Length: 157
Image (cartoon, rainbow, N blue to C red; front, side, top):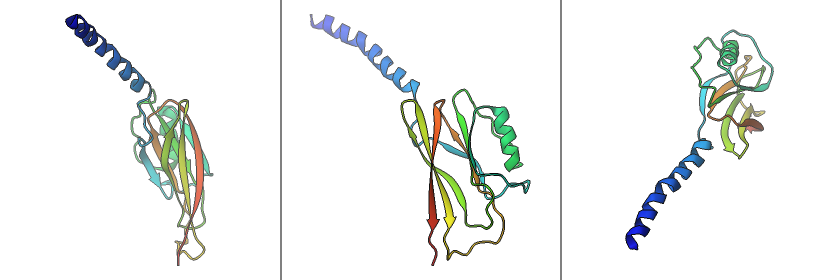
């Protein structure tokens, strides 16, 4: 009897572990997994853009959008498993501004990208030059991407 029970138990274990693998294969993305592809404080072409956030879902669109910002070669992205998020602060009259995706929260049907927009405080010394902060981020998901923004004022003495 003990041998039959042990045999049944050993026969069931692969199925149980197979079920666990299926659950993680469905959503392997965790909130800490995203990576910066490109970022900068101005465009290489010296053109200025409008403030925007854009989810890019094809290599063609990524290549085209990246060309607006930099002359760097675009990376090859697997858009069957990932998306690219562009966050752009638009034209700013001075330095001291920056934009950055700080974290991503994963939910059942969507992910939330948290974006920090840094502005210089009143007493900050900044360059007297036009800037256009932007960032391209790779997000390994096919879920809908939602965006939250937080404005942070840098305090300077």
